[in-house]
Length: 297
Image (cartoon, rainbow, N blue to C red; front, side, top):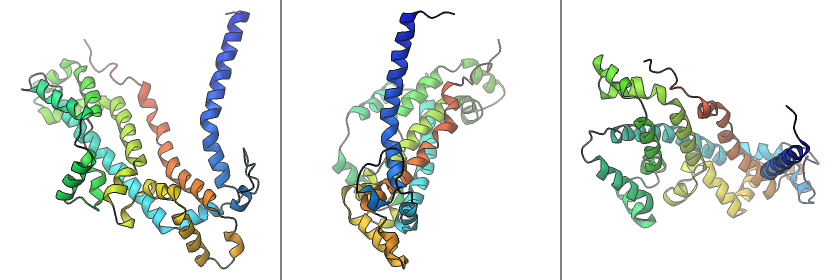
């Protein structure tokens, strides 16, 4: 099929715009990688753009030797995994019940849920509730208060309402109850929505630093995102990291290659790359239609 000259110009402009947008989005991330792999004292001279001028892994050595960051990384992983699983299971069960038309007062329940999306008690009532529940300075304070997402419940509910009624009717004929229908029939064919909302929930849990900064006081319970926020807001932690590294090394010349900026970039990448690696494994569920062929007329 031949393309006219005007169409070629139009397509060229589109491709150029897309490449420019991709560059604008990817370059800051790439520049952070370059700075983290460059000698810190050399980075202060400026001019680091696309490639490290003096390659080094010293910045990452300091990060991985700091026990606080490694503990924070483990806390973030545990919070993301446990929080995502509990949130998806509880929200899906809630949405499945709300999708039943025979549920008494279903409209009123839905109105109450939607109200919580627009109005909340605020930070002080939440703080008082969590304190009365004994969640202060507790790992579960980062999971339990946000275990149900009304927005995700609405998405689940919409998906469940579109499921063919024949699926549940055939399961009931075979003697399957509500829990059996949910876990044996509904969940297996809900792969795309579960994968998508799991990704959204995991990203939120992984990136959230504010909750721990309010309710957590013990350093060993702080996730890596909160520690990173402390590094970005002050140089205190970076100086402590360098002092710890200096005490563990006999050659101070190696420490001169580490600066606050290089440590900040290295820590940021350590906190960012793991959640980015999740996307390729869930991407296939966004476009795959597993409902095809689930019912035969």
